[in-house]
Image (cartoon, rainbow, N blue to C red; front, side, top):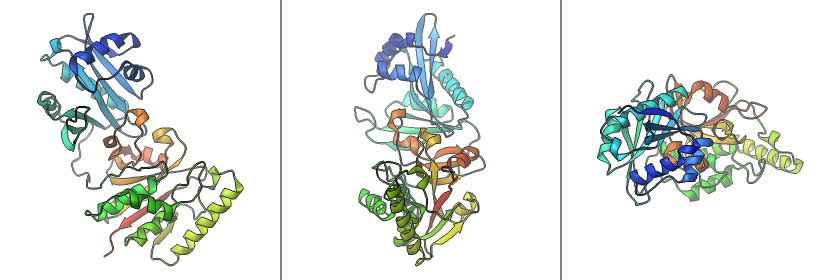
Length: 365
């Protein structure tokens, strides 16, 4: 079929909704969703047109600050199937992802859709997860991924992912992941997430509840029987630049001083200055939690903890415990995020003081 491919415009909405009605019985995109994807999404909605008729579309979303793209939806009119249109749309979506510096493309597909699964696997996608009860009718989904640059099979996918359950517990969520990676039978539970926050919080932050300091997280990991290394670009106290209230600053200083005093009675290794040598740390069995500025991911200037799951010559891979639903993301979009080394260097420097912080957990020998 000689179809013309172009970006969708708002005038395509009626044809897109008609195509959605024809192709899907559940989980249909609404007019509002299509309009968001055409006008505001960090992504592209590509349509295939044959004559005056819209015969297919595909939506790709880009994960800001990372090298990950997601094929959010693809649909082909019944009369246009069997002519290679699906493969053509897929190739053009991959090209769009490459143009946006993406190295990985991920997607979900119903487990009872063998034709679609075959299309993806013929084009180099590999299965890496099964998601139960994913669709509105409770059907399961397969999660597939393709590295659209150079493929690498040795990436560590053994680090469990845990979703933070509050706005302020990214640090405890990452500590749970690190402990779960080192002790595979360890349960990752909300009760412990909140207990770690109580132990490690700075009490105050710019607004709302305070997050967790590197010193507090290091202590929490040490108390749970792990060997801990703490790497900092400065000794502290930390995060004061974002707080205006002097009373809050005084409280944060006192909390920091107490953490520092408690660390004196531990064998936590503290390194001030220096660089974060991720390949060496990972090869030695370390599980690094790294403080980043969330601005490069969400455009929100806040300190945020992420878990490093692996790195190679091109990318650092991250577990992000925070799921941002405003960008149509799912939990799987926040796991093993590929981030270029250049982008990672920018995001792991927080605030005016360019704070760099990492907490690395190891098993005790």
